[in-house]
Length: 228
Image (tube, rainbow, N blue to C red):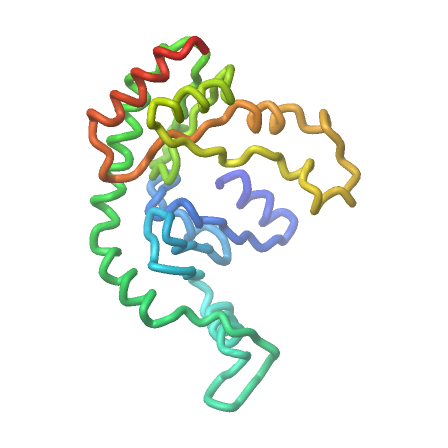
């Protein structure tokens, strides 16, 4: 973030932080969402702080942008029936707010449990041949919405784990430059080899606060049993 903010200042750019999977994460003791003009958070049910349906929020320290965002979410209204600009209906249902207000009380505890689970995964997998575990940069406080490893034979490992009752995920299997939506940019396979290699090797292991050490050990034992 330090380098990004220097670049933004040099070229007079506005930084909007995608914090959708990073509730309570920190960089150099500063929580994400506080660096740029806006921080965007998702409260999709599967997120670290999730509602019971679609929900999200923006945060900002700029009063002018705060007022503008409020207008945009409410059809451009400044007061009832007075529309200052063309806006949209981005209001969050009150029910979702009630759910989030209750769950917010547990977010720090859930985050600590995710971090503990991640440390245990790394401890058990760090010396397994063909497996690369996540690493944290100095000064970061990761919150592990996902725990993603890289595996030499990702597809084979995923099938093996599935047969042994372990559900995994791919986040994400197709790089952006190979998505049909971006074909107009003219990129082809091989243009971004690092992204393509990652897409072929990443595998998301089970991660949620309620995971037990016994469950994590089972997952890791099965990974070790697989001839990667």
